[in-house]
Image 1 (cartoon, rainbow, N blue to C red):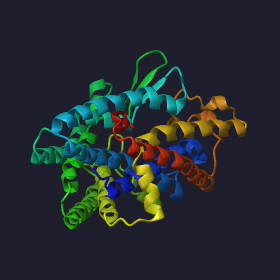
Image 2 (image 1 turned 45 degrees about the vertical axis):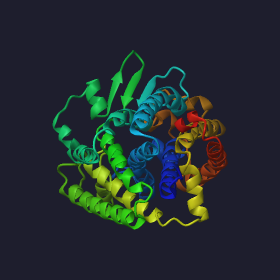
Image 3 (image 1 turned 90 degrees about the vertical axis):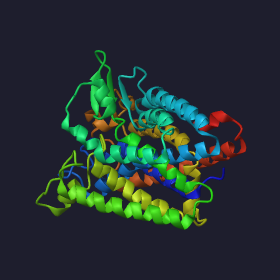
Image 4 (image 1 turned 180 degrees about the vertical axis):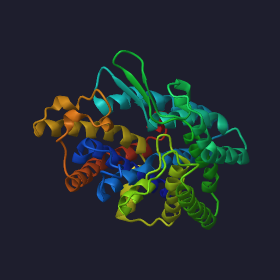
Length: 387
């Protein structure tokens, strides 16, 4: 089946933005002093660099649903169900064994954090059963999860592992020095992925492009308006309420930073709305250097994801050594986003960090291009569908 350029462009754009967030974690001087979205400490540049990457996880979950539909349209539901189940199990393994080591280079695995790859894996396992529902049932299920999941905020079952898997970020100590962090509960992410699966029908061969663009624009605009309405009311759908500060800029920071862990309704509306509009814009794809670069990354997002974490961490290890801190400080016993105090003073200012990040993206480009060409020339190798 011919690849859809608008989807690849968006995948590529989002994976590159995700790399910015992770690059910032390891190289930005300010990252080791305060939370980039803290209204009382942040600044315009730092807030925006973190805020723009809020779009990554929702877009990945939604596009994974569309991709699942396209695969099922190419084969059949029985094949798709087995594929989603096996791919989901594989992603959970990758998160636990491969990504957790890449983030910290800790052979003892003192911290195991279940993040976006785990979430995508579990959601795919669940989607392997959901696809047997009718299209209408899948839409109702998706909207119910997305708009109704904040009702779970009425219950507080902190410390319960099953509850953490379902709805709430939590930490679990399972031995004297080892911790498990459930950073991405499954609800409402499964609703986002199943909604993507529902939208997959609009990408079937023969579906009118003008009608698809009209649907995407309409849903995008409605979602954005709904975000401002829900966020302004500062009640249901806002697990993390916003604060009216004396400084207008601080109020804006607070307003535009709805809860991500787990994602509140306002967070999903804020991120999914612009995503629909971008998909509509990218439908009018024209061959340019800009779009072609993102298509290269968008064809191999999982390959990029795995490699970029290892390379960012490896280059950070070199950087701390060259700046006199000692490479040992990058063998992390806790996640980098927990702001380890022993790294205070390390890092680069915002402009230097951004320039280094651009160089890093350029460094990743030829590897992704080569692997993408390899995948195209070896379509018969089924294992490539898992990368």
